[in-house]
Length: 264
Image (cartoon, rainbow, N blue to C red; front, top):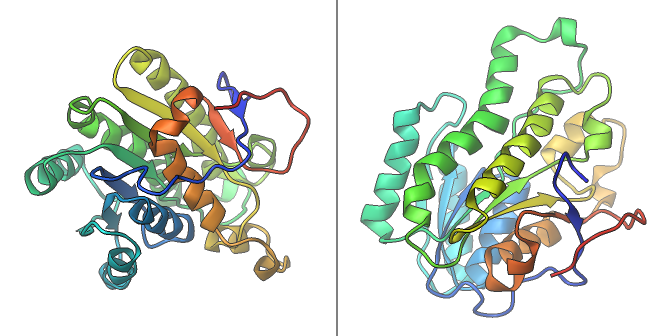
């Protein structure tokens, strides 16, 4: 369990060919490791992908990769989540509706982690930025997009978690707090949407090659870890109809720990 959310496992959590045909998906933190992998997997499954991130050049480079990965044309939406206002998130939803005509899914892949440090050494501005990107942004963006998502019959929102047993330990600071709070948000949102057209999912990747991993686990040979590709494919899988049975659950990609799980 993560909070009140059940863990689930799937033998091969990858989207089938054409699983997202005709759909529009928004991926935050698209230029990061997991965001990039999720965007490419969604495109390969047929989705038109809106790439949201703060680095325009990185998004432009990713645009070409995503365009080559699937049949639908992607789009770029530059936005710094750390400084975004509620009005900015409303503008994201309005722009997607105007330019794309629909929104079928969101993958919240953006993350902010400044490194391990004691609580009494966290600068107030860093605490605020960490909460904004990891917790407040997923809430405000989902809230702004829910009216658009509810117009679809099979919409889904994927929130990315981190191992609660790890990030609840000393020195994980604002990042650990945000990830624990995110579980509460997802649990509440699931209960409020359980009978509607919008599914809520959690995704719990295992250790993978990423900038966040390098920052937290200094001294580790990060290059020996798997790339984020499998986690990105799992995010795309959760957006498709095959994941309907995992509604309100957390897809656990870590090595088996013997806990009870649900399957799709």
